[in-house]
Image (tube, rainbow, N blue to C red):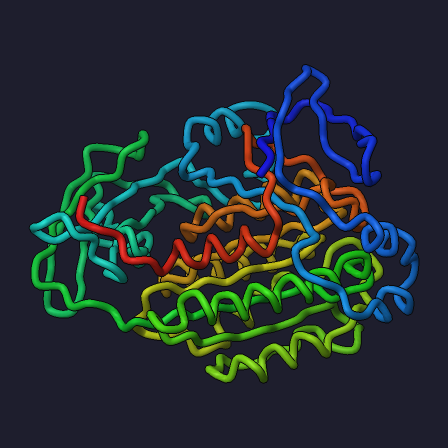
Length: 406
């Protein structure tokens, strides 16, 4: 893997002497080492696919070509606060999402073992539930006092429940780097289930990468089955969306344990439609969160949102987005955006807002493979350049692994 400094400076593309693969280099002289080597023949073929027909006719692509990075703002909280305190704070106003009034909690039993999939409610001084979340496999959850413009009304309480077990805590204050610890004895273990969803933009602007993405996602799904299929029951849902006026707005498939059938559905998709920059992200999230049968008890519930464009902006759509994001958090569905070529800075911050609010993380495809159009350099710190399929597999395995007592 290559370390890459993504500190928000301007970046140039440096032509490697071997393979004509592209890699990012900082104007300040940041350096990185990597064991990545891309297939430049396939990369050049993708760059020459200038229309929908060519893109949809790319066959027999091998996985392990697209490159990507991952950045967790929850694990780099001071960095995130610094961004919002500066010029990037305007994006919170644009998307009407507030991540500042954050509480973080870790729920464990008396022996320090994480309590997984516990319900955590943030209750204000008027005994109103302000935010609901579920603990992850580390026993952690994040909650927000005023995520969508409300006025915080403290003091607040954290109410934790799992089965018949109950516990509560009055936090010392907003999150500053370490979660509050709540001890909950007698909690039942969750079902050994992984709910895994992919929601993929298939509009025309995705044609430069869609077939590569299909190969990568198919490999990820097969690898997840091989890696954790003996530990958890895998329920898979692959879904696709375009925009109003296209052949379809959302093409949804229910959760299934038939992995082969889901892979067949994935392989049958093509790209078309779109037109303007925004796409039907609102409808896609509503379908993903509110119109699918998520498990009531699970080790992990993950929704990867693969896209290259923002939602249509309107007051009504912002409210719908807020509802879907709040519902995802309540259900324990962690939104993990995967940004493709063509996104702008506003879209980047929208994606980071929704991953923070649901306890997810941000994944971004990079230029290092030479495949597809130009990818926005994210406003993050130093990150590892990984193969996309390996990165997604890592995140999924990490989400279901058994974490020992602290």
